[in-house]
Length: 85
Image 1 (cartoon, rainbow, N blue to C red):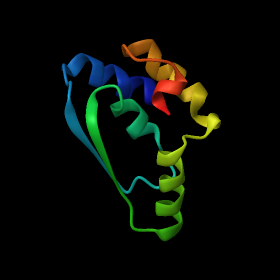
Image 2: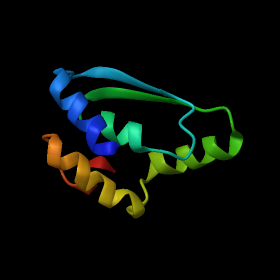
Image 3: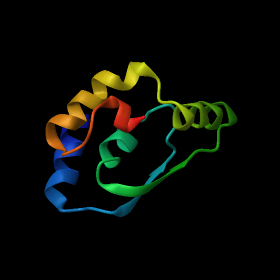
Image 4: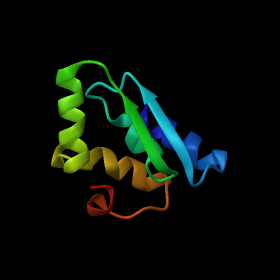
């Protein structure tokens, strides 16, 4: 699914736009797929537990997301995982 999303964004010509994910929860796939193409991404979440998780991820993206970033990099002109962090 992540690969499909990144290919769609890459083919859309979107650059420098704003992204939005409603109900982001603990799923960062949409945000990772948008990251190479957006200057700003808003993650909307109402669950306090999920908000706390997302804040931690924004401060320092867990290494567990590195394999998913490799998928993004195959289809987007972006840096390594350190860049995503």
